[in-house]
Image (spheres, rainbow, N blue to C red):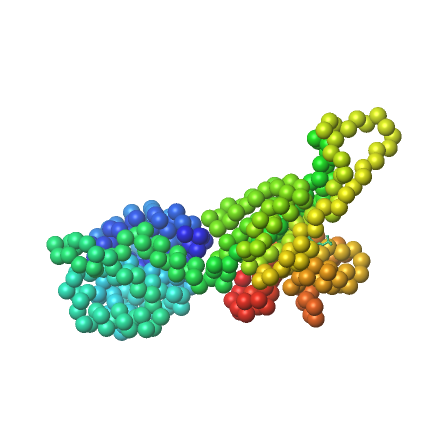
Length: 404
Ligand code: C5P
């Protein structure tokens, strides 16, 4: 159902016995995280009340060109609002109006104003569905890009039996979810992201850490999920959280734990992005008891942590690999060296010298550096920066011009 999260669904409801099922349909859409606005034909109101549907959809239900105060129900605005339209149930009458563009009610005028995808779930009696006219209409609507959700078998209100009952609400929701998912640019792709700081323990209460908030990594995870990917987010300690059916969030503390987890997934991912601020060193010795502060000086010997990104680069096969660099001097030169040394497809440079860039901000200012190109971006919210990064990945690896 993840493809429906945040989607604006314009539900066109026509008049037939299956109209009562739209109450269940709306509940399922809302449960899946979508927003629903309903337009009913005047005949549909004979079968189910607008009050029921407005209560369930949490939005006013409209059916005529003006409301009770004679304000215009703006069909163009409704059409613009929609990510997609679903006409369910779609009667033979409405199917035929869609063919000829007969806009004699608010649903039809909105339909004609809509540029979004249109799903149609027909429902009618057996003879009507089998009539040549209906068959021709449905195939013409398919040819013009509409998506038909096939009716299902069962007993009909007329007493007849046939494969003309409106598809069950859960099947409609599943059909649309799958259809939307398959069109997403990162459908069937796996993305591994490391995020946040690591904490390297000195004793049970102290650690070596850094200021990373993890915001950039979490925003990239959100963007990848919105593009249809399955995401594995391996996060150091942050106050952030994220839930999504396609997300596996693994919270770790040390660089070694981040490395161990990352390596179990790496072989099977399509894209790996290392945005974590991994501690390069850890204390050589962990003190089991809290270190006493009796001495004036205290020495900690440090040993190197595994370099996760470098190991990704060494073991790279099909993966698209992105690293981050935070530099204070000779930024581009240092970033280019890292790009080469760690065998990356590109590196995202954020400089501490830039206002609005860096660790704790909600904004960032990046440059994307490849072997022979550098693209500089303005200061933007990290959510927008995440989109820029994925647009670059889509354009270079997947040759896809879809916007993140
Ligand atoms: O060499 P440097 O640490 O500056 O490289 C930064 C990049 O390498 C970042 O993408 C960071 O996530 C990654 N890195 C890593 N493991 C380390 C150190 C850095 O994955 N131990």
